[in-house]
Image (cartoon, rainbow, N blue to C red; front, top):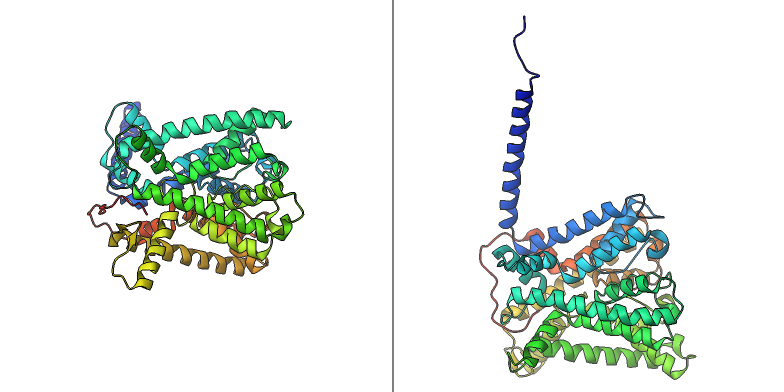
Length: 464
């Protein structure tokens, strides 16, 4: 006669307790591994988690009207990386729920990984952990005079204030223009513009508003505020409040380079673009300004058909997209501070000088090295991406190169080839967009460097 009680409730409880204990051990080990992880790898995994969760949500039957799993992965990556390229149109391909998911991904991607969570920690008056501080420094690339806890508070406050004002202005503009659901359109476009994402609820982006000065200037203002970045906001606020006597070198370079790149880009497009010559002068100037702005800030909206512009303008837009916005901003590109550091190296070499100086300030060697490395990683990514699209797609070289530059720069402009990409082409662009948001150099560091245990040296008020 069998006396065992293998099916008894007690043994069931013991088995469940053992399973829970094993899970707890594995969970604690995972947390320990994460805490000991290098900041670039945490940034990489953080943005990857945004993409995966967003992808799964967009795959839900009530989130989309069209597309397959690969298209939804493409959209999730594009939103989290604040790019704006899409193989499925946002207004037609996704339901209101899907559009909300896209908007949340844009917002999270725009303010940076772990920023929102760190803000909630700070709102409870708890100090940030060392892990959060290190990740914050990796995400924002702050000058040494900035405290990460105060900076994160400012990021959230500025974001809420600017997007609220922008959405309010766009609501009245869209309502007066007869746009359907003007409040939702205003909120979506305000967040998309400030986060320089370029996603639109219009099938033709902002082409229908090509001659609408109010919409153009409001979108441009939001994009510029997002692109110049939170360093400038905090820096100017500290100076106005009398906490510092002058802004950092980073802020000076950001404002100077943003202004002159926009002016130069606008004038070149205005003078040289054949597709705009038949427009009245004010419309031509507005269109020229908007397209230079949208490439330079990497916001990715367009008011003219990009596929119809000249090769010279295409090359100009590529240059503006590669340079991009600023460190701690919501845009992409190599960043204007990196570009100016490279220009400083070139000028010093031409003059036979041993050190690099900019506006009378010496640029430390480690920052110069970082700028050269960023440019090198970026160029390699551009070349590799273009080579892969040349293998997978039958579209012309200039269109492939433009698509790659837009993806790596997280811009979202396209010459019309995105919806027709092959499955392999979509995967290539997905990797490029993700690389662009994380940063090609950060991605390389996360994948290939070993832990050194030494904190990065920060001895300058220039962020690269």
